[in-house]
Length: 90
Image (tube, rainbow, N blue to C red; front, side):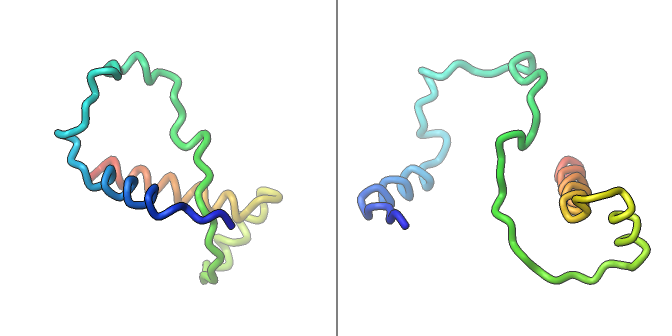
């Protein structure tokens, strides 16, 4: 496993701690709504998966499985949609 050198780790920590008001955005053009048309959230995002044990009502599990292979991915997609919807309403 590649270890990040301490000097880079410190530089990244310093940048992460810097307030946005101190960041020079002059060489980056502002984006508009038009720039984001057709954008898809999470298209290239590959979150880290975590294995866990959950208890799901038997009828819900049966419904997920009745739609074919990939019931765990479907369950994850349903939960992610709910998470995003909840985040928008806050």
